[in-house]
Length: 114
Length: 116
Image (cartoon, rainbow over all chains, first blue to last red):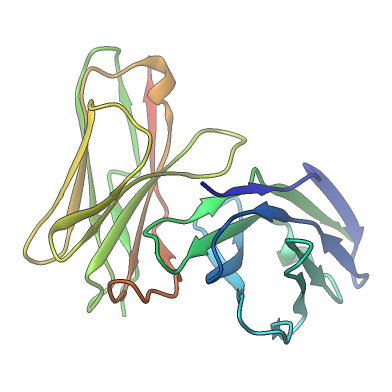
């Protein structure tokens, strides 16, 4: 079984600054994907970024990038130039390629202040 | 293109009642998954269906059941509702190949169930 841990229940950042959200996971799988999902007050879960475990290069999507440390089983999300619209709950999630389910962390509530 | 659609968006039931939640996946997606999200927590996996067959089941009691129809839409049924079943129920779809899925799911806005 997999577990995903997000140790920061809440974080805040000033607009235009950079913030990093932490995530660790535990698994015995060799092949898997890691994700960051964003859930604004509208409730819809939106994919922010995806990392394939067999790729050493960290994924980036515009202002969003990850620091993937496979040996340490760590997967942090960096948001650069934070915007008010980034305010949301952020979930780290794990998907083994052999499996059928996403395992989510408990979430980090990010607030971007003007 | 329409995204994942769920109905109803909100509903209130009393203990002991039964509820049916509905989900229509993105056109072309053959897999539908259901997740339960209790307030303040991350979503928990309930079921995955692919090509109308159950492919995975989470740690939920038999009061929870689901099915997938030939058009790939899905229903989640919960019988004998308990107060603890109050949650946001999320449906997600994907175009997934057995054993080689990327895990990228597209979520609906959820059905908010309140059990009184």
